[in-house]
Image (tube, rainbow, N blue to C red; front, side):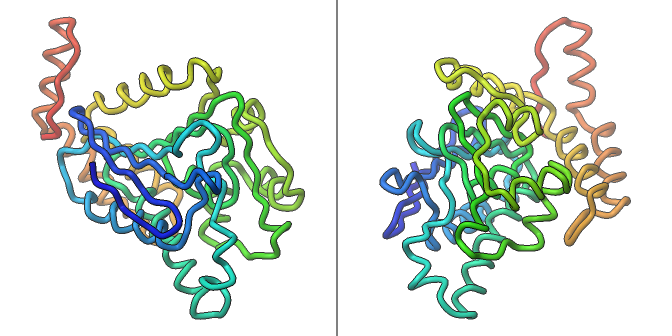
Length: 268
């Protein structure tokens, strides 16, 4: 296990035999709030694995059942986010971590239990897939704290939820429960608390077993359509699609279909 330490909380990073990288956010005394050092550690960790061809998925989750991420660690704002230079460093660390999830070469999944607020919502929305338990609680409390939210973060929320939903979340700063989160598209699925571990593990396994080149091409196409800074151009998408048809995995998929067995994809 690789443990990314910080003075306030840490990241526990593990990889299983199926090629799934699991990033656990550990700061239980503060409902897994993200300190500056944790934001920077997350960006560093994701950068290190960005070029690996053997990974199948990246999973983000909080320690325990009380919280996914309660947001940025407000208790350190006085010393870490108190002047323009500090604010710029902090915002850069947050943006880098979230962008690394959005541009990851492999699918990213957020497994959300309990509290998910502020920066925690930003992290979750930077992932491709989001699953929560029925007891999850979401909130965008920026308006109760007097802080500004980045243009990129607001755009990502609008792309996923629509401007009307985002206006509701920001302007009211109200709490949204798990059922409503599913209804408005904040998460793809909501599972009963007792069944959550088993059901989300099944979703992770399904994603990890699918053809990696196909998933990469689909994710590039979605980013191209949504646009924004760093979005792939049409040629990159077309090249990724053609790479699928030239791959051994394409042939394996057809053989497995004929033989009525599960395919064994190798990302080549």
